[in-house]
Length: 85
Image 1: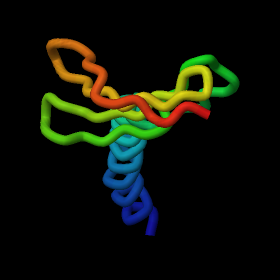
Image 2: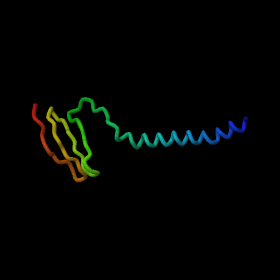
Image 3: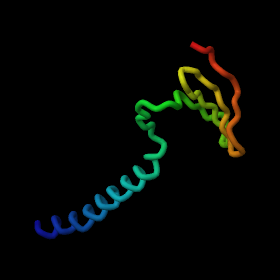
Image 4: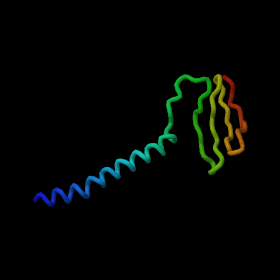
């Protein structure tokens, strides 16, 4: 009876600790991808969409206007301006 308890403890305790460390590592890696609350800022990213591994489209709102920009490794390019209010 006692040996089965010790055997389970020896096997399951490192397994649970390993799962805990793995979850913490995954949380740290994936935390940057989670959307953050932007609050009341002058510039807000409303939506973004990945087109290819190096290219992303983003809708940025600034002073009530919406701007469609292309973000790549080489820089940011204005694609289109939304209607002014």
